[in-house]
Length: 158
Image (cartoon, rainbow, N blue to C red; front, side):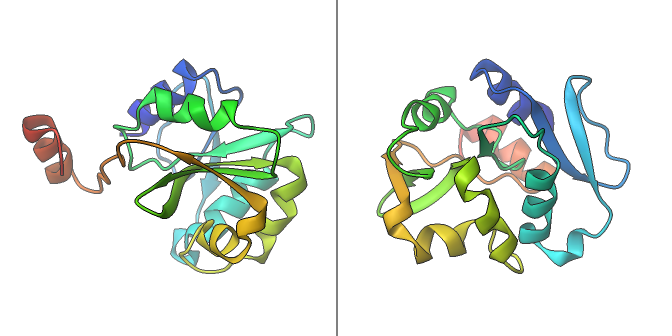
């Protein structure tokens, strides 16, 4: 699944590509692994590790989830294209803000404030004035298990 998400990031022109992964999980050659040996600390910890590992010259970061291998490249491109008016750009569908989320460098420090397993939800819901929402047509399937992936392959949805 990670390979599929990395392929989407590549096709959208994202560079560098970092992946926060547990332990010794293999990543594609052109991906910078950020090893999280304590994933039990939640999504916020992984996100903080990823932001901390970014090179100093990176102006913005796009946060993708490794369990969304069906994210359309067009959705990701729309997020990147919407940069400029606010420090956070996020996909939205059905009134919900969801990944992918682009953070301008000016918003990186907000990541240190989140806790637990909520990821960027605390920031996007708690600070709507900072978020530019970009409507996307289809919410990508959440693929957590090999069975989910098998169902996705046979039916197109999980």
